[in-house]
Length: 299
Image 1 (spheres, one colour):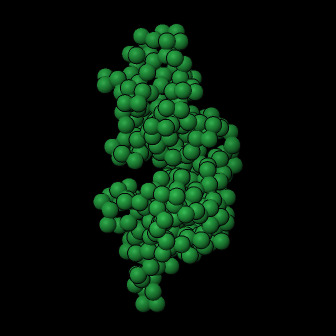
Image 2 (cartoon, rainbow, N blue to C red):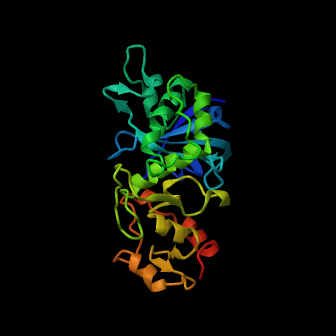
Image 3 (cartoon, rainbow, N blue to C red):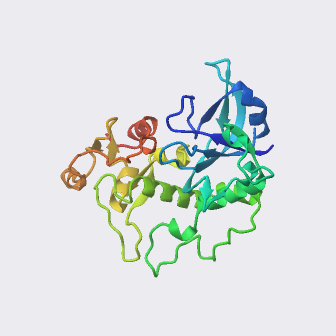
């Protein structure tokens, strides 16, 4: 087993859903098989406008022939392993290429950089994940200054000198995934509550908004931006308890079981719809919205 890079772009011609599957031509099969059962980094090419660079990691569960196209194969992603990076990792930083394995003996970028599927050295994997996870202080949930935050009372462990397998341990750590999920969701929504429309920053410079899973983790909801919404504390509480929900067109629904539905409606922004991210790929996916409406929202 080995680490790999998968090239993905949001306007891809391939049948890709990064958190679920990655489609690739048969000519890349031998390379892809190297990372079967191991971890991959998703990279958006530099030629894409506003490229995200390396933007996520995931574990390949298995490789199967594409049942709909005999010339193609699918990397099936292990459920619950995909994670968007809190900090997107550029292909270059200050003139240096992050993925050092792409350099030839003369220090120039080799033709391997064009490969849609390619092996990734453990050192490069560790370096990219380190950059992608960012710094803890940037992604901790908002807390009062004098309130101890349970679970983070010990000094954070330094990132440097961790091996690639140590990075895998970080990626699968629930606390780190929660903090990283918060950062990606808040960035997508501009730190603004998607229901009320308010963007409040506390005295410490931290956004007074939380990242809510649409389909909860305990019900197999993935840690991806399209399964998240930025909500104020009150809106988050109501959403998790089914007092508010979303229609297919993102209209905010108010439950008839709310004890004061008029007061709840007064909190919703003037459009009466969710204020969604600009990037289409970051907006709530229909299947998650539908799941919440069918299993959580109180009709």
